[in-house]
Amino acid sequence: MISFYKIIVVIHIFSAIIGMGPGFILTTVVKSGNNMTELRHSYRLRHKLHIFVMAGGTLLLITGLTMGFLNPSLFRMGWYVTSLVLFLAALAIGPLVLSPRSKPVKALLAEHQGEEIPEEYWRLSKILFRYEYLENVIFIIIIALMILKPF
Image (tube, rainbow, N blue to C red; front, side, top):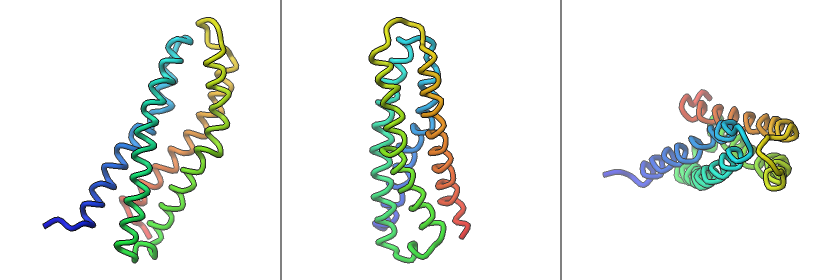
């Protein structure tokens, strides 16, 4: 018989795949646009993918904490606590860092006339993508901690 804890672990793993997988390609998707029509379409796709990131990420946090409450010894393990702190930091980056930097990009996409991508977009997106790459690095560290459990 499969225990409730094992079911939570399976849900946790699938949540990571559903939430983090698409998160790693969000930047790549919008880099494929060669003109404003393609770029706008890329950002619409990115938004749809972000829904999976948010749903998977939320379930990831819930199942991770549930595992901790079912097995309180996890809260004394460095890899678990470090992963949790990094995950919460990554969650905070969204509204505190990414959202303010994505608003000018979204405004430019909505207002710009013509098909040529303006230079301003490249400047704004470079800043935004830098923080998205940082968030991806944080998630890679979390995944490594979950797999290796080094401390």
